[in-house]
Image 1 (cartoon, helix red, strand yellow):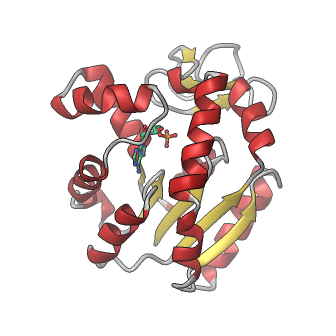
Image 2 (spheres, helix red, strand yellow; image 1 turned 90 degrees about the vertical axis):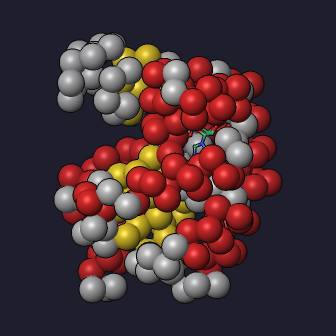
Length: 212
Ligand code: AMP
């Protein structure tokens, strides 16, 4: 199974990916998580990406395409994978197409800008394992602590309100055109980002069964 999750920042890609990874037994490849980890470790790629990512801008295509190329070659991707946050531009989608991976489904998570702004204000992420929470909608069992690994929950630097608005503008300009791109491939499956996690997971699983 090879899935792509498309959608604005805050649409719920990370949350759906976490659940789908568990249910399908395939890894989630989140370019955002890979980049944040590289930034915090201070690797060469992290140093290149830091200024872009912390100000909410897209990291250059060649850097991100390189990350994906490397990651998808690892053995855990042999049975399939979920792409969370890649592709985000037409050149990235073209590069992925050239990799000839035969993606099964592209899930587009629709959400309004207003709902995104509201969500991001309450988003908290685990500083160690990147699990995602929301103070109202998906609260951790113990305030400020990750249910999965017990580490502290933090607010992402790029979740401050002005950066969220900038990220939404970039989404509309550079990522939204991918909806048309994938519509033409016949693989696009649209869900409503505010419909509820369980409902969305079950409709994605049903759509995947239709592809088997
Ligand atoms: P995310 O966690 O998916 O919201 O990504 C966080 C940040 O990482 C983005 O705002 C970008 O700076 C960077 N990033 C993640 N994925 C990509 C991508 N496919 N292309 C360019 N930049 C990316």
